[in-house]
Image (cartoon, rainbow, N blue to C red; front, top):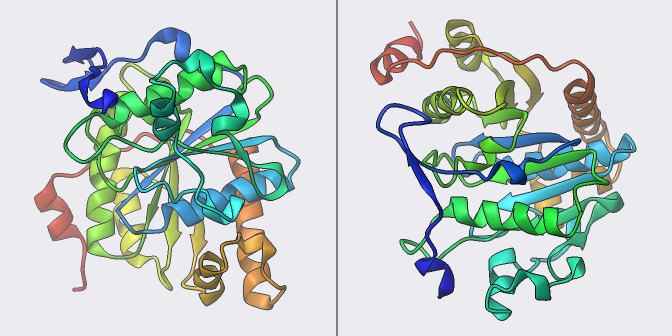
Length: 299
């Protein structure tokens, strides 16, 4: 496969002592739109959160583009009602000659006009996710698809924070971290905070805040936030309607009205409004692994 033999430029030491990172061409900057990167522990609900947040922005009249950055390419199926082809798969069909592609080859319209892209990724162990992100943004720039966009949401693979999968942070204004009220989720969140801190030395990305997900309580999240300087922007409890919306392949905004559904919808609308109007960049200091172990838990 072609992608496995293509090596993106690497720069050592710019994003942290001894680090080796994918280099972003300055011409690939995303200008004009609010760019958000969504991270968190694998399986925590980033794709559900990203898609519902995209839907909320669209309900506020914003032109939204969601980019799935996971090789399993399932970020946008609740918006499009199908598994759409990935950028990498489509590029392979034209031997990576981008000039042969049209926007409709890789951009698909979803719920309420949200435009959807699945970047995809190389086979396991054969390539770099940063290259995939870079190629996707390059296509968007070449076809002038970012000029009429108000919000871009990157939905990023799991809790991987290597140079490749941290690449969306090079484009983003804010990073949102999705977490549950448990040790493993918060441990992963701490690693992501460290990655953002490194990227912020050379890029505009800043921490926007935390989204508490699938949790009745937030006591452990609150304890961590207070210690490192984070803030919870939204809290989505373990509502069965959210689970059912994934099975129905739709957003929460397409579920039949009910008290719990209405509450979740309004929380997403409030989150979108906050990100457009009131979000303030946060300065957070990640903890050492042992410090998290000692901090969390019950007395």
